[in-house]
Amino acid sequence: MRHIGILAHSAEGAALCFLTAVHEGESQLGPHDHPPVSMVIEPLAASMAHWEAMTLEPIRALLADTVRKLAAAGAEFFVCPDNTAHISLERDGEPFALPGLHIAEIVASTARDRGSRRIALLGTKWTMDGPVYPAAFARHGLEQRVPAPQERADMNAIIFDELVRGIFTDTSRARVVKMIDRLKQEEGCDAVALCCTEIPLLIDAQSSPLPILDSTRLLAKAAVAVALGECPFPEWRGGAYIP
Image (cartoon, rainbow, N blue to C red; front, side, top):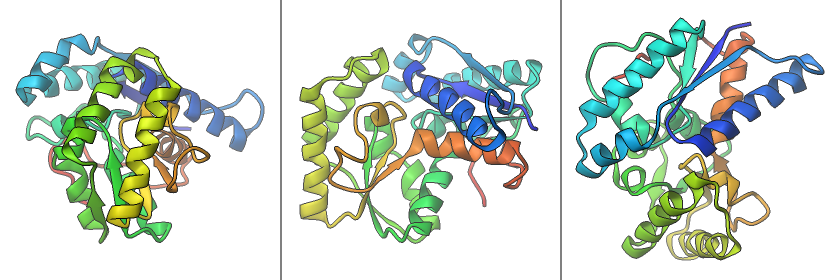
């Protein structure tokens, strides 16, 4: 079995990815068995000012150092359960110490395989307004829609004021469900991509008006498939993603 490395950037989503990988491994291998997993996380505070200023090079350097730590721990490839971080991971620079899976590519290919055509995208303001998902969806012939500007601001506030701190409220759940329903009714979306890795802790298939694409769990399951030799070993080492 290959050794999975989790490049964590925010804690709640990374923890969900870790637990999903462990449970997925057990479901395939039997009780108490799963691929080896290492996880490294630096404080999100080290990156927030750079995100606000969109100075991506320091963030990429921090993430690259985290990948080196994963390699030193014995990991053979990495996954990053943070959609926003992929904006920085896609920047040009020295190749990372390990190859990795690309979360947006996994979400987009899953949406295509499920027959979706127009995807509602929820995430941080940087993910919803950024380049990573439009490029990934375009590679798979998919359309993308995002919430209205005020809704995007509300979604971003819910993420950083609550979700990444482990706070999940019925009030915020209702607000996000309303966003999804509007994207379904007014924009014709046929699925919603939960592309902040903490959103699946707030919204699940039962509460969502649309079928969900859970970026966190999809990434974890893809990692296990690679670790068990069921999917090709990744080659991407940062920079622009080229299939």
